[in-house]
Image (cartoon, rainbow, N blue to C red; front, top):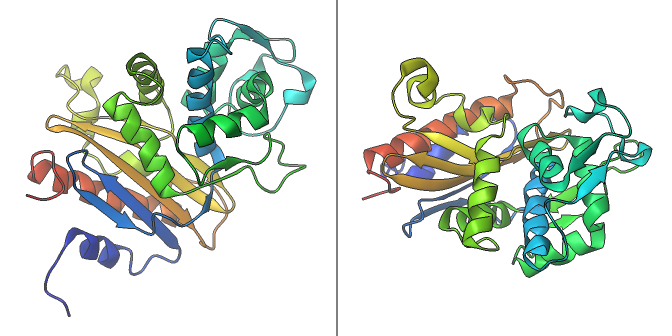
Length: 282
């Protein structure tokens, strides 16, 4: 057995008994990276919503969209799944920024279809290409009864999106800051944070400053379990992307093997970064 216990080999050892395929990308934003299968193509599931948000801000920066415009929930936008707009009903009107925020923080599928309709699917894909995410495509609106595929991406593209947000270079510094705030409010980050010490995450309970926070967007469908984003620590930020496919169990629940093993890998990365004071290795 190889006794050189690199971080990559420790991750591989952790995943040895995982009955699925996980790709891992980590970038400490200081020149160190972990890259394991990062050019594999994955179904996006709801991670495509992060790219749609970036496309919206790009079009807004050009004056071709406005975050203060109003969009209306129409019958053709309806889709089952995550979100809150189903409770409001057809005819609900929101500002574009509010719909986009709901698209991310509670992964609202109806709000997503409203933003896709507002921007146009072809225009979204053009923006995705212009932003440099050459292996990412939004194939269809969210209508699971009509389409088998929603989107395609790679861990490399997803990591690049969040690295640009962290550096303030996605569209602009101001746009990156606004998108970061939205990603920080995202509700579904179990894969990334399930094994993090709650003490560091819950400043409301302890009264202490929040030492660790996550700005992310996850996504799950039968074909995939994905998560990715920025983890903030007292030593700085790092980007992590975990994408899973080829698992046996298609049911979504927090104890799904992809979620359990993803949480283990995420905690391993956190411990490494904290031990190396903000870097993946010394």
